[in-house]
Length: 249
Image (tube, rainbow, N blue to C red; front, side, top):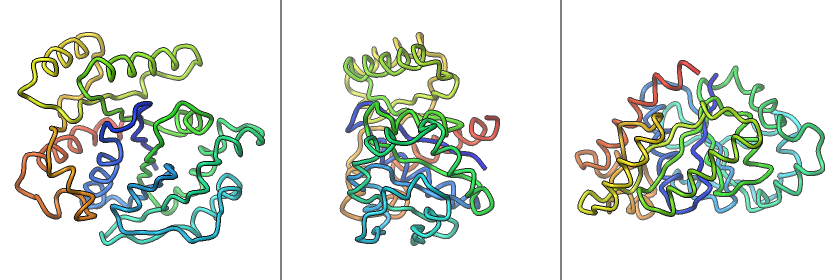
């Protein structure tokens, strides 16, 4: 079983859209996949049309993997299940601070799902927090969307510095460009600059597209309603490039 995260310190960079579309393509490729929506806002849960039970269960999330299995919901797509977010997930950082071995709790819990799933995708909230550090420890690979702008470049630099300072392996970090506007010179310059500094950038990138924004209206991955459009082809290319990276880690 492999665990990957779609993560960024910065919000609004296409993180959840990536998690949803990659989960869809993984499942469509025949891989038994579980997407876990760790963001209390529940955007990926919304896109997949699944809801959590009304009762708060955040205190049991890190106790035993059986509690996670109780919360699994089937999606509309074969091979793809979802653990939807609950508003109580906003308390994860406070909860983790009270637990021993907090950095490894998530990793231990997810191991219990290895008989059920080949791939687990974590859709993460845009923070640096105790939960984030649990994700860094639990994940084999962390895919980081980066908008090619100055602020996003700065944020990615900060993430790399955090990994250095706290002895996390930067080999786990795999960045890719998201919401790229080809007509903007700034985007081209930033992409060239960052690719020269960070050799791990993926070749595939996701364009800025109304088709991605429409995920909220259709509540579905892009392939479902815009199959022939450039944004969908971009997610296909991204997934194809991800596959060997996931397998070797």
